[in-house]
Length: 527
Ligand SMILES: NC(=O)C1=CN([C@@H]2O[C@H](COP(=O)(O)OP(=O)(O)OC[C@H]3O[C@@H](n4cnc5c(N)ncnc54)[C@H](O)[C@@H]3O)[C@@H](O)[C@H]2O)C=CC1
Ligand SMILES: O=C(O)C(=O)COP(=O)(O)O
Image (tube, rainbow, N blue to C red):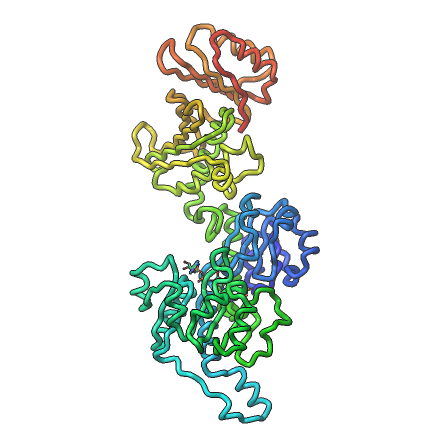
């Protein structure tokens, strides 16, 4: 039974779903804050469910020897070392929509709070001061709202802004002009947004490109009296620069839900009269927390129990519906890759994968990942479908996918061609109705063989006497032949022989096969 650790506070719904789906679960909501304890126990788990408090570092991943999936009940995964997880073959998934409305609403609430100084006015009124003349606000109607990052959350903020009769402008390199029109948003460059906006709200992920996107030079480009809202990530704003701009009065107010270092218990901006602060509450509503807990538990259980992959950041999706149909082809692609990988002794420059017939309509990204996994496994024992594409890229292996209708006898065929400095070697296979993968072609020569744990592959000249002498050597070595499959280009031309044997092939027997006069190559293969 797979075991999952929940190391941050999640709705009890998640615990129940894991249990209902047959996944053992330990709920330790404060563990994320205790790095040492997490390091000590993480090796016991197949899955880790987190929010933003747990930091999944390279060190934690190194100790997570059983880990197969990290599920982020929320959106941002900047607290996970995704490249390190990928290199170790651990899927990282999030719940990209579950808390977006809630977070957008928090940004809008922050905008109102800034415009009318609600938190300060509230505190003063509670103190019995009745400072009616101290709190003069600004109207939102007709003001320009500048949105940096117009994805899921930014778009919802945009729609709310339009509803409030604001003029909404957005900077997002990936926002299409059509989508901008649909949202009622004017797409602008960043400098223009800085120049024109009365309110600026941030909704990008924290990446190397977005880090410090609001620094002193950006602040100086903004209108005097601008108000800034950050419900995305600390690190997008240089906090010291913001403080200077608030102190000088250039920025009239800032509302911050997120901070460079969290938890933020002491901060130079705390106590500033024009700063509204909340403790990373963007996603904290009953509705959003139910959504993300339910979704993360379902996604992680689906992966651990059925092999379905949804919302993974480092692996193509495989739906629970397609998983049963795809699985035998995943196996075929991996075994074909493994076959090619075991036969290739020089550096691989490229891999061409041809999908013919029914399989061309399937999830070929997942199949290509599987093929790369098989191909690279002789070099990298720990490679899997998550890490294989990144590993192939790192090694400079160019991957080409071709999809076409069925051309031969097979309704579905996958052909893998490995390209090295010296040659191109192709191998093709299919899955029959019994669900078992078969090799049906090697180097353009047709044959039909099932994959077996131990096999011998021989290329030879098609001359009389080979089979008898080969079988004699194998029999003398005490190895039982399970299946014997032959193929040849033409009578007397190149031939191949793929033999399944019971048990490992001793080196001496393989050497004796290689020494036969008509043999060109002989190799023991393991699947
Ligand atoms: N305060 C909180 O509790 C929460 C914070 N968040 C944060 O909000 C962020 C945004 O979430 P979503 O909208 O769901 O993500 P998303 O991926 O749907 O949208 C992000 C947008 O940022 C854009 N972008 C990327 N780089 C950019 C750049 N250099 N300049 C301008 N735009 C850029 C992308 O094109 C994309 O459209 C998350 O990454 C997360 O860090 C999310 C949920 C809750
Ligand atoms: O989903 C996100 O990106 C968030 O920032 C929400 O964080 P949280 O789950 O509340 O710790």
